[in-house]
Image 1 (cartoon, one colour):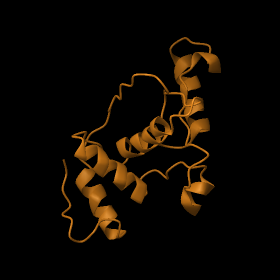
Image 2 (cartoon, one colour):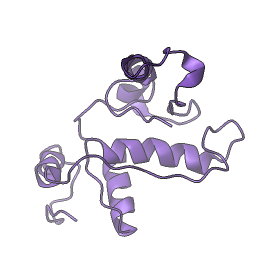
Image 3 (tube, one colour):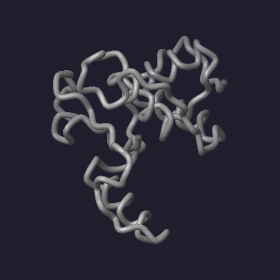
Amino acid sequence: VVIPCVGDDEYAMRQMISLDKAVGGTGRKEDLPWILKPRADVEYGSARKRSRGYFTFGQPSKALLETYDEMNSENVSLDLLYGAPAWTLLLQQWRSRESDCPIAGRQLMYVHSGGLEGVASQLTRYKHKNLLPDARAVQTS
C-alpha cells in the first residue's frame, strides 16, 4: 500500500509507474501497489475538501497534530511532514472497518523512512498557527 504524503493518488500513481519502469517493469497499474485514498464519507473542512481530502504538504493541521499526539501516546514517534499525514489516512481507513477498505483484514508494517530532527521546528509552526496550546511546551518525543 502506498500512502500519498506529497500530492494525491494520481501523483503517487505516476511516481509508482515511473519507479516500476526504472527497475525494468512494465508500469501496468495492476502490477503496482494499492494507493490509499482519503475516505469519501469523512468531513474534511473547506481547505481539504478542495484537495479531495489530502493534506497540503507542510501545512500545519489540527488533524495531523491529533494523530501525532495519539501515536506518541502509543510510543510511536512520528514526524509531522510525512508520518502524521500517512498515519492520519491509514487510521481513517483502518477504523472504517468497511469491506471495501484496501487494508481490511491485513497485517500492516509501516516503514518510517524519514527523520525526527524537524519535529521541534514543525511544532513551533503549529504554535504560531495557534494550533498548539500556549500551556503545552514545544517538545519532541
